Every structure is written in structure tokens, then in C-alpha cells.
Length: 291
Image 1 (cartoon, rainbow, N blue to C red):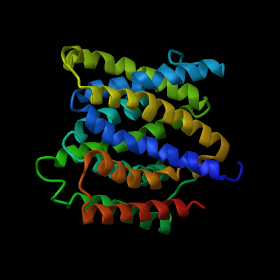
Image 2: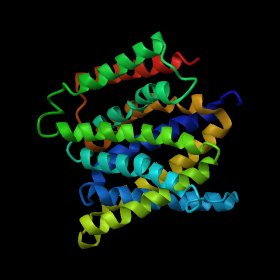
Image 3: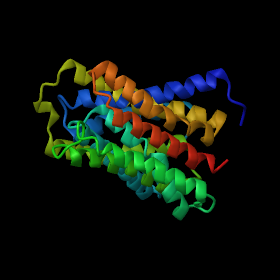
């Protein structure tokens, strides 16, 4: 892998900004759309640029191949569950909380990596990092200004949604011999197939009259925060590797807080700041131990 340049770091920040912007856009989208509809539109719209990319690069999309059940399972665990839980939970909490809770994914990955991979075992520094990071998440739940008995379970759903991303990543190891573009496109298509009938049965979005901002937000979520973000992630991975790309996890909670304040005037409490610092220190230690 080449040594990162200013352009590479700029693209990494841009990727973090795109992923961070998803949270306040989900909040806006919930004003007009139900969580199942939001999840469906995200994966359906994201499939479009991914399919185009695969065609341009002559990459075979194996969505209905003999390994279809892996794509379907990963699509359900890695996309359907997280997108639904996050959309459902974020309606009752601030979007900046979702950004912080989602930053727990590197910590959860560290735990699962110990049990499901051969070269990512726990050591003292990694264990301390995980404990510090999750102490930040626990501390965030003690912020009674933002999380109370009315939205506690909504915040918990977002945290579970974040875990879905990690479990989906572990499952992806089962088909690690396949191209990233093929895998991502295939799981997006399967997630769309799973969510379409659920959307029609439970929410019937065609009966609603969404406002303009919600429509813009849900289109942005699909094409940019999901579709374009994955394409940009592929580019960074290919040029700079996984370790460099994983640094995006340090930026997402910071950008999420800033964007939530700018666009939705969300509160930034002292406990939010402390929680973010603890989570980032935990992520740093967990990742540093791999160097």
C-alpha cells in the first residue's frame, strides 16, 4: 500500500463526513417515512450506483449464485437490521447520540475478532481500550437530559443496530474470496428483496404525503450516504488499506455532533463530550495494540 497523501486524508475526511451526515438525514426522513421504508429506500437506491460500477468494471454480480444464502443472510444482518433499528430509534433521540453509539462498532469488532479470527486476539492494551470505550457508551446512557425512560429503548436499538454491522462483517469473512463490489451489490439487492414486502405490508408509503426535506434526505441516504460512501470506501481500501480506512471511526462521532448542532440545533451536553473522549481513547488503544 502507498504512503497516504494529503488527498488520501482529504478523501478519508470526506467519507467520514458522508457517513456522519446520515444520522441527521435519517432524523429528517423520519418526519415523513416509517423505519422500514427508510431502510428499503436506502438499500434500493444504493444498489443503483453499485450495479453501474460492477457493469463498468465487468464484475459479475453473484446475487443469485450458489452462495445466494450467504448474500441474503449478510444483507439481513448487515443492512436490514441496522438500517431498521437506527431509523426506528433515531426518531426518539438526537442524531448526535446515534453517531456516538455507532462509533462503538470498532470496539465490538475487537471483541468478536478475538473469538472468530486467528490473528486478532485480546491483549492487555486491547482489553483496556475496549473497557474504556464501552465505559463511554455506558456513561452516555446516564445523561438524563438526552436519554430517559421515554427513549431509553430507542437508544438501545441503535446500539443493537451498530452490533448488526459488526456481526455482518464477521459473516462476510465466509465469502472473503469474492470481490468487495460484488459482495456489497449482492447484499444490497437481497436487503431490498427482503424489505420490499415488509414495506408494502406494514407501512404503505404510497398513502403518505412526504415533505420535500424528507424526500431529499432519503434520496441522499441511499445515493450518497450508502451508495457513494461504499464506492469511496472501496477506493480508499484499494489504495491505502484497511488500517488507514478504519481511522474513519475517529471522525464519525465528532462530525455527527457538529452536523447535528448545525442542521438540527441539537444539544451538546458535557456528558456527550466526556463520552466521545472515552470512546475515541478506547478505539485508539484497541487499534494501537494491533500495530
